[in-house]
Each structure stands twice: as C-alpha cells, then as structure tokens.
Length: 284
Image (cartoon, rainbow, N blue to C red; front, side):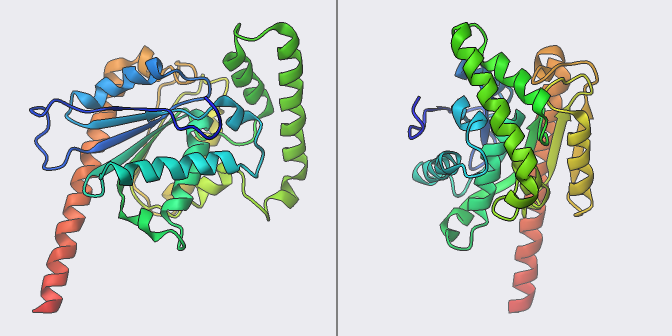
C-alpha cells in the first residue's frame, strides 16, 4: 500500500439483522502491521448486531517514521471522512473502535477534522462514541521498539532490520528530547487526545500486562477525560497482552463492546429527543 492509497473493507449486515431505521456504522482503525483478516474477526461482533463495519489500517511507515508533521496520516483521515460522506452515512450513527497507537494516531487527525472550523461539512457525520483497545500510549521508546520489531517480524531481512530499528530509535529520541519546543508547533497524539474536543462517551479496554502500551498511560487518559465530565468506561483485562484482549476474553470483550454501543445509541436518541422537545417549546 502506498501512502496516498486508502485500502479499506466495508461489510454490510443482512437486511433482516437490524431493527434501526439507519444501520449504525462501526469504523475499525487497526494497529500497526495489522492485516485485514485480523480486523475481520472484530467485524463479526458488530455485523451480527446488524451494523455496517468499515475496516482500515494505516501503513506502518506512517506510524513509526512520521514525527510530528504527519501529512500522510492527516491525508488518510481526510480520505476516510470523505469516503463516509460519499457513501452517504450522514443519517447513520457512527462509532469508532480504535486499536493501539496506530489507530489512535489516525483517530487524532480524524477528530481534528471533525471539529475544524474551516471544514464544517465533516460535522454532518454523527459520531456517538469511541472504543480504545490497548491505547492511547504516551512517548514510550521501549514499547515502540517492541511494536516495530513485532511489525517487522520475519518479513524483512536482518540487515534491513538493523537499519530500520536504529532509525526509529533516533527519531523517537529526537522527538522526546525536543518535545518542549515541538509541542508549540504540534502536540503529540497523546496530548492531543487529552484535549480532544469531542464529548461523546469513551470506552477504554486495556491490560496491566501490556508490554507495548503502559497501563499508566491509559489510566492517565481516563482520568483526564473524566475531569471533563465525559462519560468514560474502562476494563482492565489484567493478564492479556497488547491487542489480545478479544482473543483471550472473547465473550467478555464482545458483550462489553455491544452494550457500550447500545448505551451510546440510547444516550444519543434521548438527547436528540430532548433537544427537539426544547426547540418545540421555544417555538410555541
């Protein structure tokens, strides 16, 4: 996949599966190195509920070698939102299901576009909630190296690996060293998500056993969002490794995702009804 392509998969439910007028849309943003066949397993959680599922994963080079000035990720975010408008989901309720830092880095740019004053047409999209799986994590060099090593795996020769990993370490070290200055130009994705202007509910699925994303970072984000009076829920799976919570606890994971989204739908419908009632009273 090149940096300018947007390779995605959309799965539609059977017509008889949904009891809503407009099928909700779940957007899965995969982790670095994730294959579509991996995300497909998560699709069944939602497809069986009658939801439309869109799957997309950013190229790993965009994640590990982009720094603070990531035009490619922002381009992908824009293309993804344009796609949603092109297929006509303005009347559908949308939930993001975000995996690891790769997913949350792309999500950060999606949020910025959704709330951009210069691109208000994206505000037509009706987002009602976000699920974070094994994210977001703050600057963590050791975890980043582990993630990159897992992505490279055996698919790249040892000589290339000896170049790629040191290059990543150099870039990451540079970012940490100069972040006090760089933050005035562009926040890290973690700090950007702390001040994310959205106020819809969020669910954090994480584990203290995760060796790539520190649980302290996730819990720090949870506390920050709670202080903004956002409806935040979380589950610490305790023993499962990075993005392995569904594989190790499939029933618990699936049930929580489904119940959370249904709560988001109900919250949105209640708010919409109350807003209409308020407008009707003011007009009378």
